[in-house]
Length: 220
Length: 219
Image 1 (cartoon, rainbow over the protein chains, first blue to last red):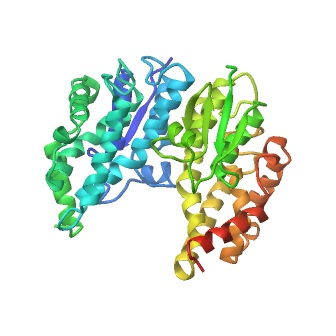
Image 2 (cartoon, rainbow over the protein chains, first blue to last red):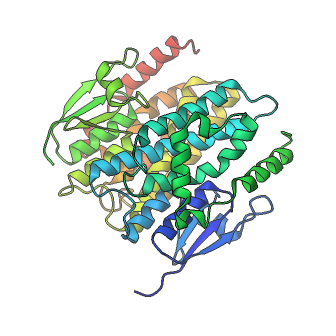
Image 3 (cartoon, each protein chain N blue to C red):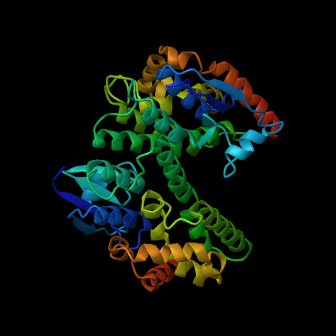
């Protein structure tokens, strides 16, 4: 098989782009991450490849575009089968998709309700965020990873969101380690993997980005 | 593969209808259990503790939640007949993209159409039609979103047709006038037994919406 051309239209701090990069790393694939200037002006290629949402990530496999990070990760898993990211049995896969969907629907928005808030962070926003993480702790249970004994699909969907937690903690005035220790230790475990560590940005840099964004939006 | 299949559902739910269609496509026998959403039963709360919503598919006592998840599960378990997702991985990703688009947009916009009035309603109507036109574009000249064969995106979208009449009445507009290709596609789908027996009467949905409006004090 000739070497495929794999490109990701990227933004360094986007947890959605990070999911795709981690999945590609897990599969041992070489790819080009092309940074987009989301504030200055999106590239023609991005607008053409993702006309519906005009968002990153876009994954281009030999020029064919794929959009929406969870769908891209599924595609990567199905196209390059080793190592498998999803469980082999249909019920296990249904469970994994359920939790990926839960994380997609809940975590980023809930963290946004904290780091985007003007003035005093609403108590409800903090409670909701912690409730969501506690729900995920329950799903994790005593397992090393959401997938079970091995790192997999749900871990890939979730781990990039954790680099935004420092910003949420500093602005919200609480720590994830105290409220949800299991999530904290799962985060550390995932960050030990090279596929994750080599792409996930330093949470301090994410915090700086959030502060800059807040200033830009007139929140601070 | 074999084993008891139960569907916890609510008759007008477009999400429940997706699962009904998938089960019918695969000719799977199942027990349909109508749920009272204003007085949720123990089984529903136990089987979907996270969202407490229908539909819930229970296979051999184990729950699968979220309608698109259920359709994929049904397709994977009963993989010897009536395939719903394409075999080609790129086409499969494209099918998931459009089913996800339907999920992200249509329910919320549709709800705004029957719940609101004035500018908010007009904006919702416009965006709703824009979304349907994008879907028409994706359909193109094919018989179904799945191409020659009825498939995943068809299953994801066609149940919303039951609610179009209610949206039209509440919003005072015609979806068929704006999106004739889509309505032609609906009629093709309705010729399939799995769809015809899973969808509900649109007049009954409109009556239900009027009851909801009364319940929520919406004019």
